[in-house]
Image (cartoon, rainbow, N blue to C red; front, side, top):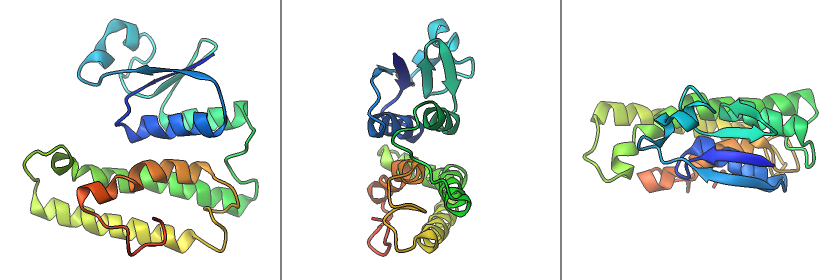
Length: 181
């Protein structure tokens, strides 16, 4: 039985959770409260880096969400969630990595506002808004006449990007100008 240790608010956790659901896999969901529970010895035995998510499959612990997604794709290949064509696969991977390395860090700039805390540095917020606009323009440029990035079917690109893009409106970033909403 697969076990996913996660926190519902985490986009890293949600991307694994969504993939498990899309692949129709049975799994146990164990919520880790990131208010200190991730530092308890029993969780550190699973992941010494104290991060979520962690997927456990038959005693094998997998950390880092993108590694977990790759594992699930190879171990449970049906339905396929990555294109087979080299160009299309590159597009899917680009979307995943740009989301993790560019979009998510920019979106976290708005985390204080999202949590109802006092606002952050206006200069950092402006730079983050510019970064988000750049990413969304780039994503839009990768879309073609197919409904998904490089595919006719849902891919890991949509799963990864979707866990970040979906929170942008809640922090004041409109998606109405983009074909991604």
